[in-house]
Image (cartoon, rainbow, N blue to C red; front, top):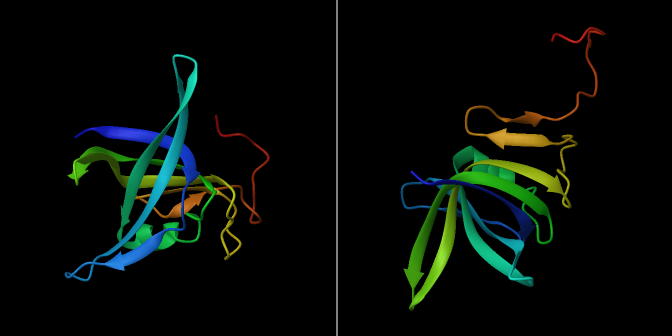
Length: 130
């Protein structure tokens, strides 16, 4: 398995599709800027996010939003062109489009749910546990 983490700008709003087996998958592209020999370069990655994570990413993957994704890197060929792909297992919104439900940041991973953002209430201890 070839894992990759990329951060860049979403190029268009995510689209949610359903496979013949009733599995949901969100698809969008991320543009990653870089420099090679002093010249600006842009790499485009087609990103797929499956299942409940795919449904969750829909509120964040809006055109122009900054997004960081991690997952399995791959390529696909179509009409003589090679496309870079990421089958994302984790994503983190980095700004831009905000969630409509009032969540406050953090990331979403396959092992948990959306979270990791600052707490907006509850009982916080004044002591740091480390």
